[in-house]
Length: 376
Ligand SMILES: *Cc1c(COP(=O)(O)O)cnc(C)c1O
Image 1 (cartoon, rainbow, N blue to C red):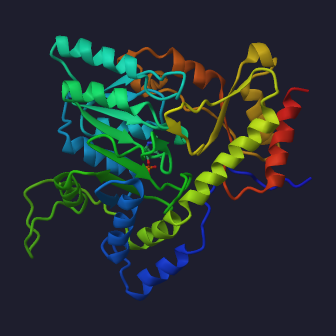
Image 2 (image 1 turned 60 degrees about the horizontal axis):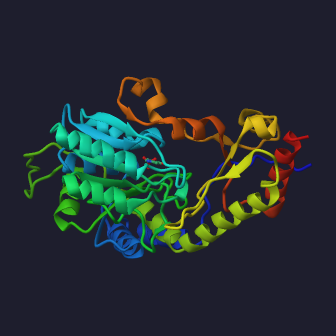
Image 3 (image 1 turned 135 degrees about the horizontal axis):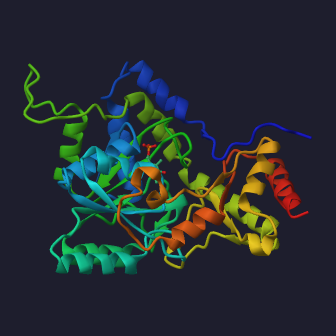
């Protein structure tokens, strides 16, 4: 039997990337400035429906810049989805802030709007509103943004969208990441499109984009001798990587279609198994299905999620549990959490299956056979 390694979500180039990279080489812009960056930002902003964009080294750097922009400083509280990857939270710590976690709802697996609204009401009455809300759109699925934005607007709290995993998704027909004060995306190697590493900030606020670009290029004032009045970072994306990004943008729709097809294939092949439930897709969302996620209820299944991961690994197939909620992490165990049970259950039972769009039907059939085999 074919036993080649199947990864969770491997990079998948479209073909045009090298042409843009060649352009970057022939113009000798092997640098963190250049025409590929400008073009990538413009094309990206157009694609997601934002006015402005700023290309940076990583999604993590993007969030760091945005938190600084909205004024998060030492001792400031920031509300964040608990069900996420750690990079949604680390930049809060970089700024000396204190994360406060909010649980997921069961329809989207993302931040529960009612829990957030209730927490903001309570805090408003006590005059201790957070500096910002970081709303995560996980696994390619938008959160229920409207009520979340409404609650933030009501209390004048800045909303920042972590759409790192959600490029290509739609919330009521619009791209997640474009609803708040600003949003960001990631082009890390495992994301739906990749530049090997990279991130993008989008916003309709021109001043915001100018400022984050300034900070991202060492905060150099306008003087030939390198004058500095503010602290900056070296966070700008390289022109060569922007060239890869331009090629990848051109296949984004194809990738979304491919991811959704993989999800449907798994659903057809596995949903009859006792205890298996696939990640829902609410009416307001069109998910990219960046990763196919499902839960396995061990009482009904007679086996648990970890057995399936182990069997897949024995067959050289990479699968993972759902993200471990931030309030359960040793690093954040002393932080406040609002609710928590929904995310804890998803973590306890959740499984992410390989979802790379370069997989073949044979790969998928191999995975399905191994998973089905776990039920005996
Ligand atoms: C990948 C990711 C990030 C960070 O992006 P990098 O480009 O890897 O720094 C942030 N949030 C979420 C939810 C992610 O999946």
